[in-house]
Image (cartoon, rainbow, N blue to C red):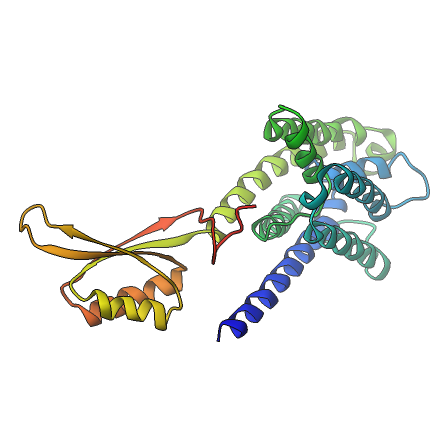
Length: 301
């Protein structure tokens, strides 16, 4: 049973990782690049550089930059630069290349830039959040962040946000060039820049929200006289462990057992129902646990 559960968990993990990479690649190619939205990061920098380096496309620039920082990651981080990030970086760059090869786009899918900005933020934000939650990323500035964190005292979060703002802000100037204004209008640089800045901040908030929601578990406290029955259900059916201690009621002075367990949301619902079935007089508290580190949950490394 344990081996089967481990296999299912491993398959689910890699499926999620691929879904995250695909979502990110689709958001970048179909909605972000065609509208010249620049949210920062290597994908934004590649979009900017594509306009200055002749005969080279965005996916190739992205692959070159990611390869360079991954090599630096192996040199300076060792095991910190994990196989998962290498895998996601390669898959993400490959998917961008395949999209460009088999579904070439020379213009946006629609004439509704705000709608396309929304889809761009959603797809790239959710894709990045899924990969972050799996302990991976698409490479790029995330590897740079790990190197800075290990070898300097720089506030990495602020440094990366500052860098992303600079890259996004550069779109005001890049897309104000005649090559763009003659095609899209005199105010195109301002329009592209404002959309890029809006997308940058919206994506940042979305990633934080999705990561917190994906990683959210439930902390269940059960006060009961049927500790053996409820504890047996937790161990034998849920295949989880629990912590228990004896507590005394402040008003009644009666002693009861307190069971504490952290589990997934579906497991918490089933435990709540089962505990009430086994002990109708039980007192149950279910609360959110936004970050759980340890065996059976997220790897603290």
